[in-house]
Length: 474
Ligand SMILES: Cc1cc2nc3c(=O)[nH]c(=O)nc-3n(C[C@H](O)[C@H](O)[C@H](O)COP(=O)(O)OP(=O)(O)OC[C@H]3O[C@@H](n4cnc5c(N)ncnc54)[C@H](O)[C@@H]3O)c2cc1C
Ligand code: FES
Ligand code: FES
Image 1 (cartoon, rainbow, N blue to C red):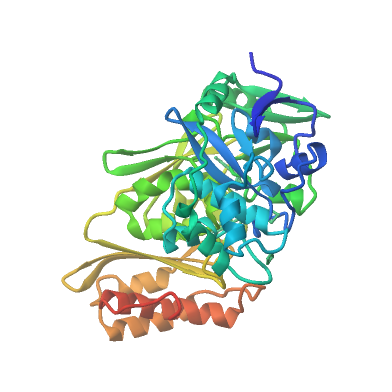
Image 2: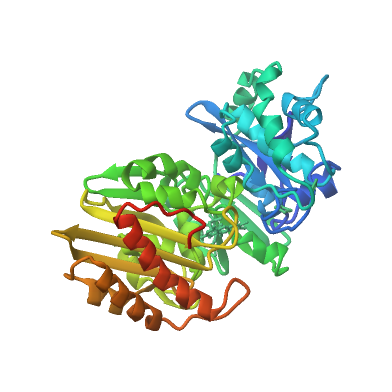
């Protein structure tokens, strides 16, 4: 029998909940229902980090800590987890991250500081070394709008001076493991929220549903609630469905469950596609990567979804499921602006990426206004095999240049079997600059986008010749 409420720990308190609206965010719950006002609201869209809190989840019999944006996390996704807020982390003394913020003048305005503290806390709990690289990564989702980051970074670098106050977590682990992991079906004011632990029960309820919304990280979907003021009737949360959360290598393919969080696929991705892995370092922020999924990126079908050009260039296949299961090449999936071949009562189950041969060169070029936490103006993925200094095969796929992620077919046809030299690259640049007719919008103009795609071929040529290219060169 499914349960009709969720259970989770709010700091140390065990909460059983079923009486709030299914569209409630964690931030609303903390501030309006629990009077925990240390967690702030800035943008309500996952961009600023003022609302950061930390989740503890049981993984391999241990607790794993994740910073999250509470403004776009729906409350009922907390089932079986611990939510840690800024009010909780100090006890008799300030927590080391707080004390270090004070001692290094990192505590600035009261608005961004709690969010910074919670991102630092997640880093501290996961025992991440405060190298420059790790600090930039862990703080990528926290914005200070007025002063600066140096004292905050100093606070992290100087953390080792303080006594480690990481308390024993075995009691929390025990409490979380006691929570019943049955399916959950909540019904509040005719809106429903479903949590399934496997595919079988999920499919039964999903096929019967009238107006379902699939939810994983909610980093796109929740904005329908917080920005467009929509009410979602039937939410199916896939984040706890074990049949949709996995990554494995089978034969010559990488198989990824559609609801697997991006941060959980990175270590395997690094091994097989280091360039794709590096692209994810610039995908949203740590808070976003902790919960967002590839299935959600494909499901959103945005022309500027970063993974899409790369997946198309790698000849990825999708397993779609529902009444019947079917396999489709991702290059056939997108029809027009945010329209796809996904049928009603169908969902993406699995993403299958062929393993790259050692002769293939993969490039993932993301062009955006900011390095971190920004959406692309233009994206280009190039997957090519070069043999005897000729393009034996080549795929060039662009994001931000059309209503869907699009293959540069004419440029590919021109380059295939041609010698790789400056003359052919120059000719290809001319072809690609006429191949698309992009829009001008808030991110960039049509002229800029057109210039960028052709310049990216120069970048490819320079990198092929081992010239050092920095992020700022193009
Ligand atoms: C601050 C911020 C920064 C971001 N930065 C980036 C970025 O750098 N690059 C980028 O590409 N995107 C970015 N995004 C967009 C978003 O994070 C990604 O698209 C992400 O991968 C969505 O995954 P999710 O699990 O959160 O999807 P959700 O929001 O849960 O779902 C997104 C959509 O997909 C559907 N869906 C989910 N799972 C399935 C499934 N299995 N089958 C069918 N449909 C499904 C949902 O119903 C919904 O319509 C950003 C978003 C925010 C808020
Ligand atoms: S309020 Fe800005 S990220 Fe949540
Ligand atoms: S110190 Fe808080 S926004 Fe700058």
